[in-house]
Image (cartoon, rainbow, N blue to C red; front, side, top):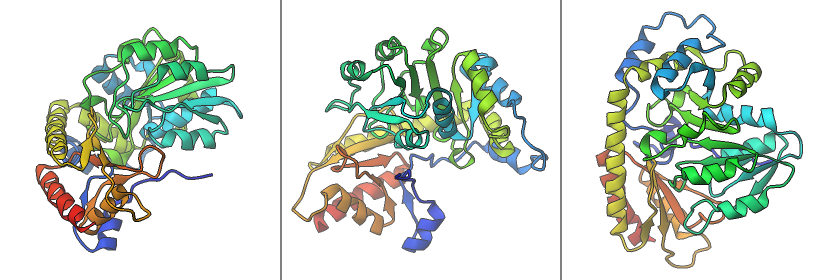
Amino acid sequence: MRGYDPVEPIDVLERELGRRIVKLDGNENPYLSSPRAREVLARFPYYHIYPDPLQRNLREALSAYTGFPGEMLVSGNGSDELIDLALRLFVREGDEVLNAPPTFGMYPFLVTVAAGKLVNVPRKSDFSLDVEATVKAVTPRTRVMFVASPNNPTGDVVTTDEVRRLLALNIVVVVDEAYYEFADSTVAPLVRDNPNLILLRTFSKWAGLAGLRVGYCLCHERLAGHMLTIKQPYNVNVAGEAAAIASLQDVDYLLGNVEKLKQERDRMVARLAAIPWMRPHPSQANFVLCHVQEKGQYGQTTARRLRDGLRSRGILVRFYESEGLKDCLRISAGLPQDTDFLLQALEEVWNEL
């Protein structure tokens, strides 16, 4: 099987390239984590003690943040673990799982690990969800569908009506709202009345805790109970839990940084749209997917060569080998000076191609 294609850590890349890195390939938060979280971690006294397997303090803090009772919340070692738990609960060998590419690569990877059968229902040309094709793809063996909203790498959001139609198919619908804080909408109100809906979120993006791996899900309390039963007992480490709780006590600060990133995303879109050979796609996340016009015939797409040229200058952006994205680059929103450096380098690299 093919493994998941992760981004490289920044220290490895700096050693490899021998220069400072402008990292715009992982959708990480350049404003770092909350000062309160860093302070709590610096004086945390219980690193030698196992974490609470029932996640009581974290679930209580999440309840206050989300407005959902703790009985409907489960935290995981990143939302990746919660994807895995959902598959363990509902998928047996040969069961079908619907996927809507282009989308987050962890879904097909974990479906394969779970011995499920991946059924791809490609998105429309504008990257919106093809609900009609999805309805037709459902069979008696269909168990789960994954929908990212905002979708990674395109930035599109799914509508409440679309999710309602999927829920009516009597399959488990997992809506991944990893970029929820950057978006204008959520389908969270549907969770209370739909026991076949699982909503995923994370602290990696808005709270700057990607390295500590803390995600959570909202779902029916019976389903949450099953997830708590089958998860690893100490799945969220004490550092991650302490930092997540501290972050939830510093929401205004963190959402202020989210607003800065949204403004920088929009500035980047406007500047990229003014480049004749770049076509940015509208996004409600902290990244922008750009179509790159072909230039010459070199056996590789111009997008890939542009990625390589930026990398040689220490600027990292994401290129995909997958169908439908080979002429695209995904660029994370960064600090204003990162955007300026990127825009200057794009013109230089393009002129050298």
